[in-house]
Structure formats: C-alpha cells, structure tokens
Image (cartoon, rainbow, N blue to C red):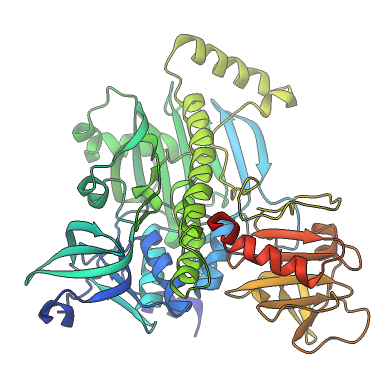
Length: 552
C-alpha cells in the first residue's frame, strides 16, 4: 500500500467517536477489584495503560469523554518519547507520520540571528523531534490500547468520587447509564491540568501564572518553507511581539502569535482578527485554510508530591509548564515510562511499595528541571519589567555579531530527558568513566548488527533489566536480566545475545573497553556500570534499582 493510499484510509481522529459500552462491573453486587485503574485517556494515561498491559498487569482505563483531542495542541515529540513509543508498539507510526526536524532558526525583526542543530551527531534511529498533531498520537495510542488483552478502556466513564482505605482505593464512576463503584489496588491520576481527582483529594498545584496571551492558529497550505522551527522576536509583520512557526503533517502549519496580557480572547479568535495576522506573515496573496484557533495563557507549577498513598499523579495532573520547549507531553509520557515498570514490579511482588516513592522523587526532580527551563524561556520571551526587557533586547542585538551572546538567547530551549543523577536507585560508580552515560541517564542508541542484520541497540532492550557487556561477559550472568554481549572476544555463553558494534559508535558512546558492563533498568535508564562486573555486584545493583535498599 502506498503512503498516499494509507493516508486516505486513516481515520479522522478529531471527529472519531468511541462508543460507550456497559461494563459488567456496573452489574456487580459489590465493587469489583482491579490491580490498576487509570483516570484519563490522554497521551499519558494511554501510555501508562499500554506499558502495564504489555507487562501482564490488568488495567482499567477510564475517560470522561468519548473523543480525542482537537487542534494541534502538543505537536513536538522528542527523540526520547519516540524511543518510548517504540517499546509501546507505535514508534514507527508516529515517526513515519510526523515531520522530522533537527534545525531551528531564530530571527530578530527581519534578520536571521543564528540557527542550531538539535541532533548534530549522526547514526541515531530517531530524530531529535517530530512534529505531529496530538490527535494523531492519541489515535495511535488508543488503537494500540484497544488491541491489547488485559486493557479495559472505558469511554464516557467519569470518576466522581474517590476514597482511600488501607490497601486500596474505592472509586465512584459516572456513566450515561448511571453510576457504579469499583476498587483498585492503585490509581494513576492522569486526568489533566484541571485534574478532578486532585480536587477531590483537596490537593493543589503551586507555581507561577504568566500574564500573557498567545494565539494558536493551525493553517493548511501548500508552502515551500523547510521543516524547521522558526522563531521571531519583534518581526515586522507582528511588531513588538514574538511569533513561532512549525510545520506539521498534512500541509498544516502551526503559528503562535504573542498578543500580550490585555488581548481580549473572544475578540482575537474572530476570523477578522486572525486572518490579517496570518496574511501579514505569509503575504497578502497567500492561499490557506484556517483549521483551528485557540488562545492560551500558561503557568509553571506542580504538585508538591506526586504520590499520595495509593494514588499516583502523572502528566499535567502533576505538573504544568509553558509550551516553550515542548516539555508538557514529552515529560508526561516520560512519567508513564518511569511509573509503569515500578508499579508492575510492586504488583508482582518483585519490589517493595517503597519503589513507588522513587517514582515521585525522580519525576518531581524532572518536573523541577522542566519548570526551571520553561520559566527561564518564558521570562526571556515575555519580559514583564523594563529591566528584563532591556536585558533581553541587548542580548538579541549582541547575538547578531557575538557568538557568546547566542547562548543567552532563549526562544524555548527544547526539552531533553532528565538525567536521574541523584536517584536512590543508582549504584554509584566505583570506576572511572567519561561521557554522558552516567548512572541515571537514559541509554543512548547506536547502530548494531545482530545475526548479521542491521538494527539498533534500544530495540534489544526489553521489558526487564538488561546487562550490556563489551568483549567479555562476567564469570556468571544473572538469569534475571537479559544479557547483550558486544563484539564477543570468544565463545558466547548460553543465554547471552551477541551483537556487533557495526560502526564502533556503541563503545564510543558508552566509553567502553573490553570487560566494561552496564546495567539498564526496565525503562532503559542506566542504574550501574563497571569496568569488570561480577555476579554479586550485578545482583546488588538490581536489588538497589528495585528499591529494596529504600525499604530496609
């Protein structure tokens, strides 16, 4: 099937209705019990549900609506998120549909200040970012979820009550046919920035609201602009403000216009106000169709704690950032990636409940990092004092000629995955290493060959722990981990998978020499590394990564 015919057959995800179906739980005399109930079938809730189901954990996923999102919303999905999607079974769908880009350009008025490449290093499976409308991502996730056994996706099921009691949570759920109750061992609240569950529990997010407004316009047009991120400060077509332009699939372009705090949202979304702004950017003779318009304000804030007993908060329910830097959806999917394997291990009795405290600690630290970067970007783009505006304008003027000043320009520095350096699940280095693959870092990909066929390292890292050894394995390898042996120096032990470092990049990126070993967590983060690993040390590192030392 050609790409064109495949596109013709693709559902219109913005208008797709998912049918409400009565659950047998609604007829049960007593509230049925489930291991995990997730509230919210957005990208975060769907990703968590798929991950758990793939690990054999039954999941009930409740959503208060029966539709996916409309408009572009989150559009920039980062390399790390694409790698997570690979493990969930939809990475290729998202990458193939999305518009790949690595290059960004920053303009001051009508002149190019500088450009940057987010992935200057070659030989990575996934690009730095793809642009794709959120409804496509949600559609692919929903289709994957509906295809999995053990994942019960219930549309038009709204959580209206929640009560924690000892070893579980009692939920009240409202449907078009009335309400019912069910019990859960654990609840994941992925129900968005206005989280009803957070409100039911009397909790709140704290932080800073920015006094500015932005207009989002999705425009369908045939244009010869390259697939790059273009950001203007004080452009002649929108003086005194900023503008951002991104290309999306289907010849749809996302344009963000800064309007200022005094802009009237009702007035500014009217076609007679929107169309002239777009024509000023594109030219008076430009031919385009306006697909979607929205006004947004934004805040940088988070909950103090992401775990409250047996309720775990993720995504926008736990933290919210400004859109500059593509940190919202990406950090939410990474929340799900961090949480699912830990919750599965606890439910299977492989880890203590204390492991879930590490979810909160690690993702609270990641949220703080994202909030800091998002706040700095927003302060630079929308200065609110005369001093900060003078500083911003001086930096922009200097950046024309002075390379050092370009490092100070902040048009929304793009998100990168958090390195969990201070995690209690890490085993500290006892040997000397160079490079970025420190304990807590997400494993970087590299091209390999396996059984003579080309492939990628991350494709070989499964749902559990992975031991990555170079040249020679330790005297004994743990049965509890999948062991990969890079460029074996001799016979390959039984149960060990041999791979070839086809371009020499794997050893370089991991600062490896013969005998080096890395232990990777189920979410592909490094948790330990050695120059000469031994079985006892590996097993101790695995126990540490499962939270047993936290529980002692």
